[in-house]
Length: 363
Ligand code: AN7
Image 1 (cartoon, helix red, strand yellow):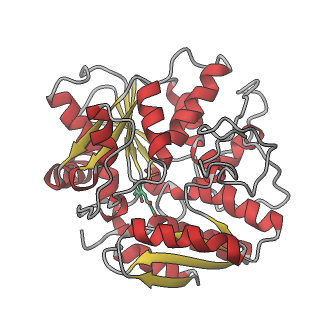
Image 2: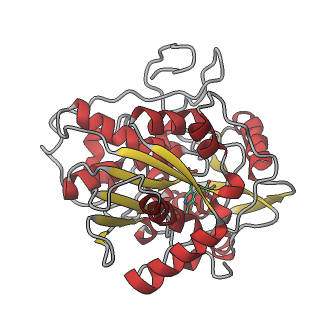
């Protein structure tokens, strides 16, 4: 493991998240060998050999292996529907890995701050593991379905005043003292689960030209990029897709930073968008997200709530896919990129649709 900030190196530890020297977020270095040999079964744990660490207890609900749906309207566009995961979002991939670690290492419980989907997923997986679970939500603006899932699976739901960014900073300050395993995406082990989306796309389609990913905290776009980087280093694919990060215009510090060429984003104090999952003004994984976008030769876009709404309806009515607003941001970004001629209409493209429409019945 390495700290990209101060270049410190560490032995593999499933309980190390931040650099003890500089507080940078630690990255896991993984070398893939013989990618297609010994892949067995379906879903996330098909790639068990390619996920570092040891897993005496595996907590799985059959996550991963989600449909890659060919678009009806656009040639060469594929929709990776993460809403088909057990709790209805991509979070289940990382949660299976991280809750397996918490169970294996004997933690008392788990804790996560969330805009909703992380909480829903953490709740289901910790129930399955028999671990106590604390989820901390901003009191206003979490989609109804996600709160319901968290309560239903037996988490202790703590609502705090303030937005997600303020809630997350409080969780970061307590998790070590309370000896709970942290399930936010600053935890690099969650991203090891999320990277398997790249493996699946690669097995089904090879390496696309572009991957459009909704960006909130920036963990997922980095994780998917990391999966492709590992495959290129192993010689499985010849090129890495250009990663395109899409944010809601009222919460778009990463899109702005990439467009303006800033080294450090200007964080947004009061993020605003009806896509509550990505209503995040101070993304904890901003360095990782910007790295994924710039190193892959990609770009970033901000889309308006109106564009997200139109994209959500187009997916529902033209493609038959129910995506929650934040998820539809990737498809809104694709439409915008086409209309601005940022990409060619025949470019092989995957839009990641991160969560299910049922999550947010009020939107
Ligand atoms: C549907 O649940 O941050 O850029 O606490 O639920 O990896 O943060 C959710 C994020 C995209 C953004 N789409 O992913 C949480 C949370 C959906 C999401 C994102 C989220 P990241």
